[in-house]
Amino acid sequence: MSQNIPGDTTYAPPGPTALSPEEERTWATLTHVGVGAATVLSAGTLGFFAALGVYLLHKDRGPFIRHNAANAMNIQLNMLMWAAISVVLMLVLVGFVLLAAVPIVGVVLHVVAAIKANRGEWYDPPLTIRFIR
Image (cartoon, rainbow, N blue to C red; front, side):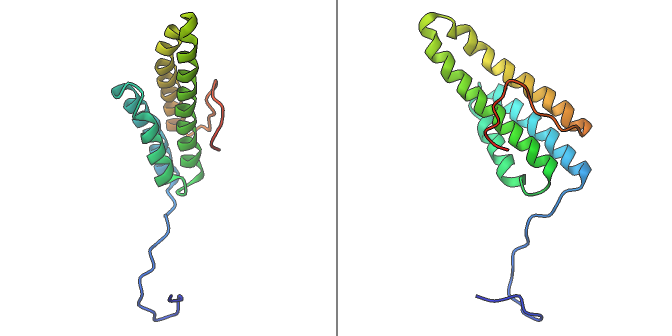
């Protein structure tokens, strides 16, 4: 292994660069818009992977984007939990209504979070358990 010695010509990959506040706001907004769109277009299946991708790629680029990417992941994880509970409740017929409401509530939470992120506001969505901080 090579150490960082002046004049050393070995390549050291750069770490993630911090984003400006405007870039963080833009990425935070796009996170929620993209995850919400992926949820709608894939009937709820790709939203989780979109949120995971943004979280893994941008979590170290600034605190605002990390917070919003974690919120997107938390919304998706909560939707998964609510869907599982709805499937169990289908035995008593209530689950059918709840299962239909899960993606609607999830998309609404993403829309509200996107609006708040675009304004630069720190926001924790209601009705969600924070699995990722």
